[in-house]
Amino acid sequence: MQDYRSAVHVLRAISYYDPEALILEIEEIGMCIKENKKYEEWPTLSRKDLALVLESFIEDEGRKDILIERTIRRISNEGNVRAFIRNVLTS
Image (cartoon, rainbow, N blue to C red; front, side, top):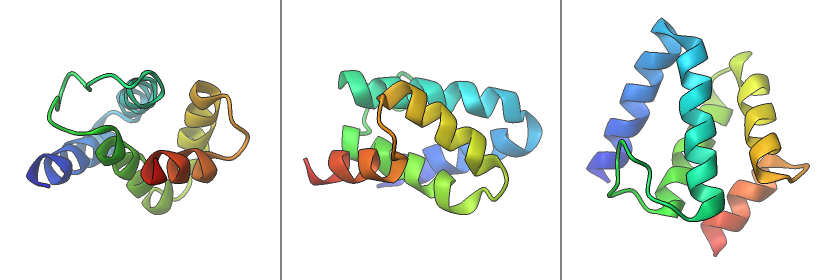
C-alpha cells in the first residue's frame, strides 16, 4: 500500500509540473496493465494496484481526465475506461 501511495503522490507532482510527462507515465502504466507486466518505476505494484492508480487520476484530475481517459481507451482497446479498470480490479 505504501508503494501505491508513493506512486500516486509522485504522479500528482508530475501532473502539476509536467503534464505531458504524466500522459507518458499513464500510457506506460496502461501498457503494463494490458500486458500484465511490472511497472518499472514501482515493480512491487500489482496489476490491480496499477488500475487503482489510474482510477485515482480519472476521478480527481478534472479537465485532464479527458486526455487521461483517451490515453487509457487507446491502450486498452475498450470503449469504456471505467469498465476496463473494473475488469482489472475484479480479475
